[in-house]
Structures are given as structure tokens and as C-alpha cells.
Image (cartoon, rainbow, N blue to C red; front, side):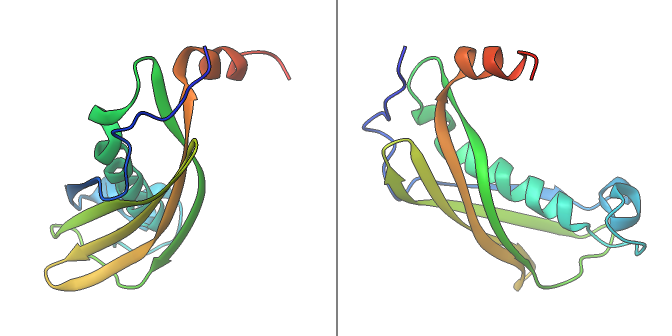
Length: 134
């Protein structure tokens, strides 16, 4: 089966996800630093979750998307207990390549912004190839 983008995968699809920062989300906990604030890897994971949510109901049957490229500027620290919101908007559909603009905010402040690229793949084929020995 060859995956082709569905007509429903069009620029403008968007989603938002929220996270209330816990000790498990800090740079200390995820190993990306030694301070008790939201770690960059968790910011990225939240941004990617928003991209997945933006297209989840619009994918062709049997397909999924996988991340291939990220550009992220983590601009502000967020302490434990605060809630951050990641928003993703699909800006480009180029065959199987999907490009999203992302912003992460807390209150009125931009915590992070950037771009995430994902590729549309056949889920079964992708998992099968990934599990083959190198």
C-alpha cells in the first residue's frame, strides 16, 4: 500500500494541548539541565503532541505521521505548577511532507516557538521496517 495524502490534510488544520508542569517535566528530571523548570525535551514533546492532534482525524486509513525535523526556540523558563499551552498549525502540505508552525505559551508569554516537520507513512510498513535488524 502506498500512502497518499488525504484531501483533508490541508493547511490551516490546528490543535492545542496543555500541560501543567510537574517535577517530572523539569530539566532536572529529564536530564537536560539542573534547574527545576520545564525542560526543553518536554516542550518539544508537547509541541509534537499538538502536531499529532492537528491531523489525527484527517489521516488516511492505515497511516500515521512521524517526526523528521524540528526547529525550536525555547525562550522562557516555566516553573512547576504553571500550565503551558502548545498550539500547532499545519502550514504546508507537500505530498507526504507536513510542516507545522508551533507556539508554546504560558499566560500571555511565549515560552517557545518553531517549526515541526512530519511525514505521512503507512503505519504497518513503517513499524515492520523499524523492527528489522540493521
